[in-house]
Amino acid sequence: MDEYLNVGKTYLVTGGAGFIGANFVKYMLEKYADIKLVVLDKLTYAGNLGTIREELKDSRISFVKGDICNRELVENIFMQHDIDYVVNFAAESHVDRSIENPQIFLETNILGTQNLMEVAKNFWTIGKDSNGYPIYKEGKKFHHVSTDEVYGSLSKDFDIPKELILDEAVRKIATGRKNLQTYGEKMFTESTPLDPRSPYSASKTASDMIVMSYGETYKFPFNITRCSNNYGPYHFPEKLIPLIIKNILAGKKLPVYGKGDNVRDWLYVMDHCKGIDMVISKVEAHEIYNIGGFNEEQNINIVKLTIDTIARIMKEEPKYQSVLSTDLSNINYDLITYVQDRLGHDSRYAIDPTKIVTELGWYPETPFTEGIEKTIRWYLDNQEWVAEVTTGDYQGYYDKIYKER
Ligand code: NAD
Ligand code: TYD
Figure 1 (cartoon, rainbow, N blue to C red):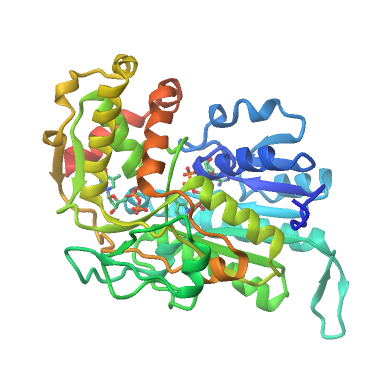
Figure 2 (tube, rainbow, N blue to C red):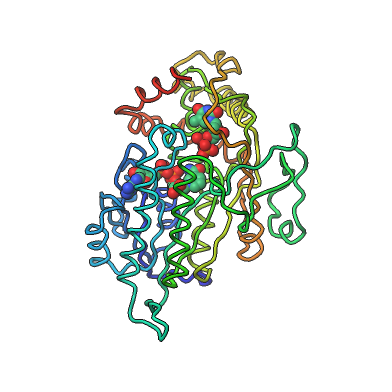
């Protein structure tokens, strides 16, 4: 732990009751005895206190319900706590919802991020240098959690994936990962031009750019990480993997958009949290890192592998069959239903994480077969959480969406 610079630090974790934010809270409390976390979350449909129920009993954490766009509220938090790091997970995060109603994405993702930075800048500034730039208190940083979707969409060059050959320097570190594959010639690097194509990714790009502009204009201390599609426990069942798991267990159809041949790179959420922790604690301000999973796959194959894994677990461990609202023999590919494609559906995302691997020694340790099994087992053991977070307009929203497709 000595190599990390975060002993005794206080983190403001926004969006800490959502999927990745909550996993980050769990990761940090487990890893560091001597930290404080202040979680700020608006508790939208995607944020649930049940996700961090146990953690909220810990004296190292305090929770504030509220909006990152609220200036007075964020100022009060900075007045009450000597915040060292802001880790900004709070966002509207679902592409389909951004197509339905873009405005809230602009408000939260852009204006909310700017509001947080403005308050942090004011509280962290202790003077001005001879050129008029702010001088900040030592060691303060704003960590912005971004996405590979800011880079746009890559071409899918191969129908049958080819072996992904890693550079020697990366291979030496990522020793735990073998038999990697890719569907294209190119991957996103940190210098790939930003080229968002959905209202969601446009809002995330705008937030990245306002963060970078603070870095230039005010020398504001920030880092940005851009990750690929996360999966794991506590994932709200509107994104592909948790939705598919939920529907399989309920014996419901599995909606696959278009031909199911869009490619995503899947990153196990705890690997992502480890990468964020490393960047916050080890890296100078103003650096940007890609965090990827070395795990490109077509959606249809993700769905099939999820079906296969659930069917196998059910057969091996009959105790889980009580979770099913269907006959075990119904867990098969017949559940797959091809539905109308998403508007402007990005074809392929693939991340080149060479920078974080070679500079920080991070790599995505969890192979997909292992990660998906852990994820499925978590959902099998936590059906109460699924029931708790899918109340309200959840079913109505999905009935409407899929009727239209
Ligand atoms: P999520 O939708 O599960 O959680 C978002 C959280 O933010 C929720 O708890 C919600 O209540 C909270 N929130 C929303 N608006 C808020 C506001 N105005 N003020 C305060 N809190 C608010 O999202 P996630 O999947 O955990 O994603 C976290 C971050 O990671 C986001 O910035 C997202 O863009 C980014 N990201 C996610 C993925 C992924 O695969 N999930 C991939 C790349 C990047
Ligand atoms: P999603 O989990 O929404 O993440 P993102 O759009 O940020 O990549 O979707 C992952 C992929 O799965 C994407 O190509 C869209 C597709 N998809 C389906 O085919 N069916 C679904 O029900 C959902 C939610 C997504």
